[in-house]
Length: 262
Image (tube, rainbow, N blue to C red):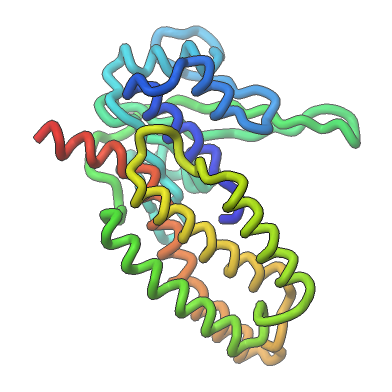
């Protein structure tokens, strides 16, 4: 949750490209980020893998009017619409991009290559058929913002009560890193997104950071099995809310565009 999902970068900058707000080359650079290279495999009309610039142009030609994000987890097909084969692949990757206007979806497969100390990451996006239907369990931005405010309060209370992230140098360092990242990277979404989406995504990332602290810092004060179970039980709905809010933020520009069409 702390790191930006690759599906989020692809959808956000792909939407900016579709809206004519960035160039194909700039979109491709932003999507790749710190990875070495991204390719798209299985694109209709292409015999083999192609680069992002060509792939995004081809998706537009195939009718894609926008890109949505899915961040599924076991028991929670968040943002998916089927068929089962695509859902299973997306669940394994824990993320996917769904084309709006074209019955296609993209699931990333990540590879590490290179010698120790000089490892680079390559990503292959597998293009597969999807069912054109409303995505599962995606809230509106307004709903996501309200739910996040409650989730942030609940997460803080739970972690403080269980003595997980209330104090200590590790927690303080993580909080400082989060604040520095937030100040440095105000562009958490691509051009064209509403300011509310930026606010919701930043809040979702903060909630995700608190959850990560809980799991990264061992058992904290939750020393008994009952306390550990209680912590997990309390954090699961908070994590679910943060994921739903992330998807709502990334998908908001498509939803706004559709409301404008109607």
